Length: 370
Image (cartoon, rainbow, N blue to C red; front, side, top):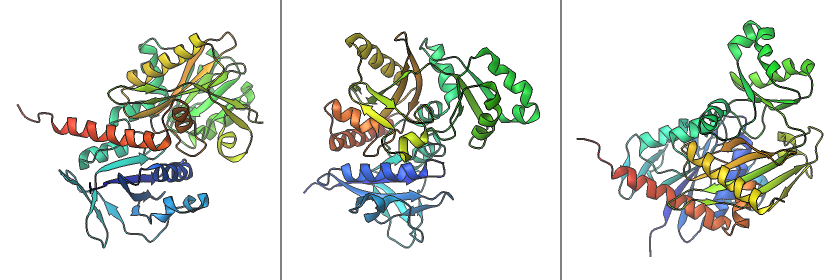
């Protein structure tokens, strides 16, 4: 019998998206092909401690089982450069070394999706799913991402970037930069996802409070020109030797926040409808897919990503952002778009893991000396 591959599902994290990560991890663990893979659940507490978690936390019967990490579990460490032909060694306190063949990080937001964990995994020699250090870092930073997209000639909405130090020193001067935009605008922490800390600002009197709130989550804030009731279009990309771009989907929002906010996504049931496929013409569908693929390539992404776009009143398209570790819950767009494109959850997870291992083998084959 062929030995199963050990997949470390790495979840939790220190960001404000910790709870969403747990739900994503549960979906991934339950989508693993039991004939090919064994799950090694490792949770990162909000304090930053890595601990081995009981498998039932992710694979138990009820969805509520993954609502929080278990405390008092064996602590986990990754020895640097521990790659072996048959797998990497992961140390769990008080237990024999664990063999891990590949890591599936499902850490949304800072210290997980921004290249930091990816760098640690590179140093440890562990293959991992998703974008590398560079793609993760630039995909996370909404300011740097937009600069690269603009340089590549891709369409983004007008925006300004504010730094916390300048805002604290002279808020009035800092906010003058926003005068080049027209209201409504969207105020966003530069390095966060799931709409955490995002506010829709309809008039200038609301701006300072929205900026202060966003600065609670990050030291850099992006303020973006809003559109009048745009269509929110999303497209999934599955990397590999022959990347697959999904059919586009649309999020139809009916929520008091007026946009696809955190509450609309996760808290208030029925306030957002996922329409798959999106109601687009054939030409518009092709353009969305073209922009999604171009965004994926421009930002040096690998493995997986969800590209979010806006469709304006004149049917013009703008790239909103990329998510290099997109939501992976039962209701998330990424797996739903892939399913609508003919890729089941089990096949999707398997392809992502296979791609990670293929890339790792290619890296190990590179020359490291003259």
